[in-house]
Length: 261
Ligand code: PLP
Image 1 (cartoon, rainbow, N blue to C red):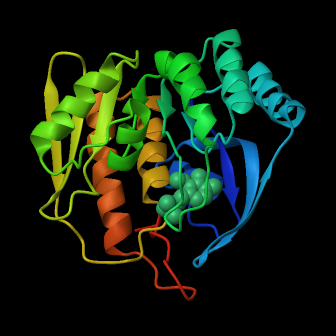
Image 2: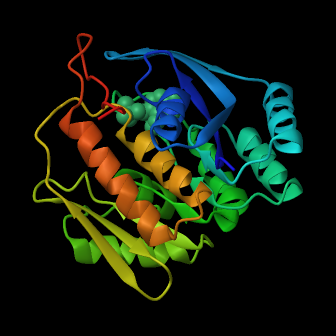
């Protein structure tokens, strides 16, 4: 039977991030993709031009429709926007005993637009992180969750972030080092005892819109296929590296990664 994955995230009209990136990634990795849209963004390669959160009723109704009938072997969350949406999603994950929950703690778009209200970070910590199989913060997101001010410039500091995030309840932590200023792109997976490192070349391109969404969606796709977390992260790392290598110079700004690479 075909594995099924659900993304709960924002729509990116520009097609590079959010729901669109997730569904394309699910499709490329051979998983049946479904969606519950939390917010619609008017977006292109130049940035986010409008954010339209959906009503709690609309989000709940999408989740009930999909989970009561089709079911999901994994769930990926992306842009959740508000504390109320986070609380609703957490409630539904419990109600449907959802497994393999990948939480990408999306906060701010590359252009600076808010994708998660600042006051919602508390709800993320109290309601959603304890339910997560894995969370996939980049360095700014990891620092925001932990309220750390220090500049992160070494993998040793990334390990400290992972250890502190693990205390918040997720089963695994994946700290992504793409924001380190130089060197290879290093990501650290922590399971409470062991750190596993994933390396790739740093690819010199500005066209990296949607990388975080794509990486997390690829992990969710592999978890849906019952792969181990280590295997899932390795497949996702290879997938995102190829997608960035072939990223698309379309539009006038920051282009998207190529999911079909
Ligand atoms: N828009 C939506 C709807 C997203 O979910 C995300 C994901 O992080 C972004 C934009 C941000 O993409 P980026 O930071 O790659 O521009």
